[in-house]
Image 1 (cartoon, rainbow, N blue to C red):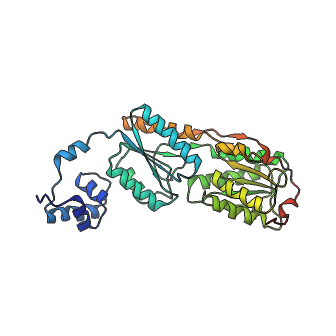
Image 2 (cartoon, rainbow, N blue to C red; image 1 turned 180 degrees about the horizontal axis):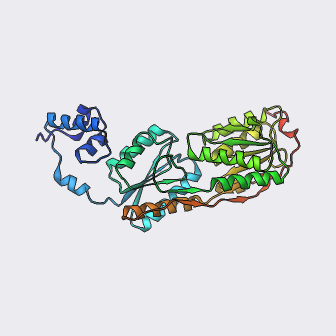
Image 3 (cartoon, one colour; image 1 turned 120 degrees about the vertical axis):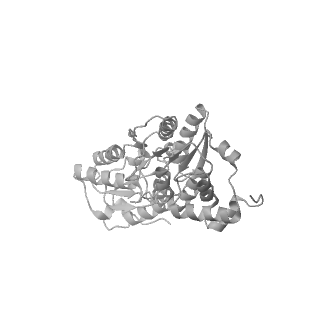
Length: 345
């Protein structure tokens, strides 16, 4: 064995990441046949041998778990992380927090890191449709729990909110206020919550016999800028909505900015309801009506499920309820003219 040859040298020769090389040489199954062949050939060519003592040390539990959230800038996911972290600490586990940034490639980068660090399990708010390293995790039987979002075709325990209940509460509330043209700012169809909330919105609109004009439906990416863009599109319509429903908190913030930019008064000229009760939403003028669910409970419950799986148990998926918190932002009555007020900017 050449003591100067490192794992990094083997990875470079094989054309794979250091994490992949490490998993191949330690016998981890979360690797492709092609990668295993290249890494083993490179190790033989370079005279590299696995350090058996170090490998034995790594085989023990790390008492660390990975938590991959969709966007650390979103207060909703910060609350999920806090609930998960505190629950882990109570069981003597530490949490390694990572940010997918609503991007599948960045998700794969951190999943690879988690595997390299040999975390005992992973909680993830998944991006996309389950390609890449997410499928490798499932095949490797790494203890895994989904939080807030799910991926079709994965038999993984999850903790989610009752999206259908939340959308129905919002639509029913606006319908009671007399609104028939509700503009919907939804999430991306590539994400389970985006699909579930849109489906629930269409069902609620039909149930309450409200206007089903396709022009009232827009989609963002769960980020602030897309909420503003969607609101601008809705309000520029020749028959603009008299109320808006934003499918997450950051898009709601973007919508609020756009409404104000146009010189409209939320709660007077236009009603607005947002998903997720961010702490400072109640301090805005006017305070925002929200469909709320307990993000900390989502994180805490997901961590309890993960620890059960790590310890050899089984875990059943959990759906947590939502509730409507009415505030002044949804008090506007429909006028059919206010939303076309000229911009004051």
